[in-house]
View 1: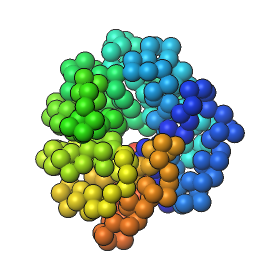
View 2 (view 1 turned 60 degrees about the vertical axis):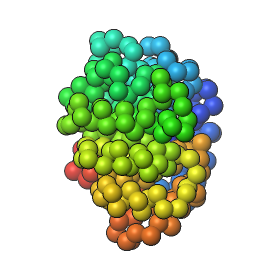
View 3 (view 1 turned 90 degrees about the vertical axis):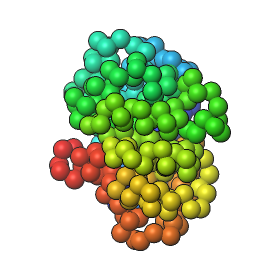
Length: 259
């Protein structure tokens, strides 16, 4: 069984429909992907979505969870610029009451900004992972909004008991791997940019295989090329299984029947 830790399913600026999502899930199953972590249409409303827009993004994910139970695993999208009361209310609605399995942060604010702390506090209290969009800002620029691997390290240092997933391994690159190496509570997913050879092997060598998760970023990327990044890596078959399945099971609590 393969678990895709980084998907959006619908990025068309409108609510998800069965017609738009079902073909993607059919394709996923064809490739052996049986569960998908859905992060929502996180850029539908721009950089800093308001409360109603955050609710709409999460409502879409909740709808998908209802349509495809056991397949779609939802993450609660948040904007750290909102007040603590709303952040708590939305995480309770999405996670405590409706079974989402984690929190997703995009580009509303840089991850090292202390305004992110209340979200990390919620992740710690709820014992759920937090997936932070990240990119090497020496390549992409605009560090005001983009969270660099160094910013993820700041988050991990402040909250060592929170499991943080640094999204986009390839986009964070070798520097990203080196930056998070000494923080055992930081994982990374394999999505982002093109499937350059060698990056998965490098991450396994520096981080250990237990901290790497397969992710596609579908529909921005496609399943074959993103799976190829892992399946074509020069690592042991058992290590590929850990990246494709077992690490995600452990991080999401799927292996201890908490679903």
